[in-house]
Image (cartoon, rainbow, N blue to C red; front, side):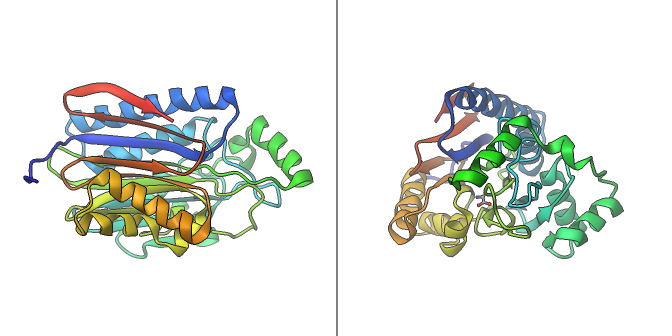
Length: 296
Ligand code: GLY
């Protein structure tokens, strides 16, 4: 194909899995608002990094999603958050794992990226970094919703499984790509467990020469397949974006049987989306089609 860019483009997702009907509706509204927020950033001349951060922040603030406020609780009944962000211009990346009391983990991940030192900070070190760069902690209970507390109580009795994460990929007017992901992880996860959403190449990847990808679902399976980078390598092999996303999910399903979803853009801004779950609320906007397309 010709190297014509379709940018700007933004795609967001609100997590793969299966949700109750009222949550599905809330998530549709949430991804719509988030994609419009990211789009406004892009059309105002903002970078792809700014757009994915703004979109993911909005999803973190929305209690319908398993990220930021509304995140699921770990085995001890606490919230521990993972997030990452990557700039396709120069492969700069930042990530945080198992942080507590942070309202917008994606903003902390961006601060880690911009500091230009370690790419991944976890636990107490990440909390100290947040304080050093002026990101305030909130009260632990400020992130806990009644829905997640009730779910934790129910899950402790039946040990059911669930998934969910939020993420965004974008291509800006200058032709640069970015990806960002944020999650509360898996319900009842072991304290200290860090999933794919904090790991560059697994839950998040962006490279202007290739594309940008964000994953959702069973983090351990996504890590085993380094799913975001694997899907982008399929683009390098010449796959169309939609087929690259589907092939990544097919391979993961065949190798692990786990539940996942993925969104991606190729370097021209063409969209790929795939999931093997019942639902994954998604929305995208691109030049010439500014009414968000929503599907789950
Ligand atoms: N994909 C989110 C997690 O497993 O932590």
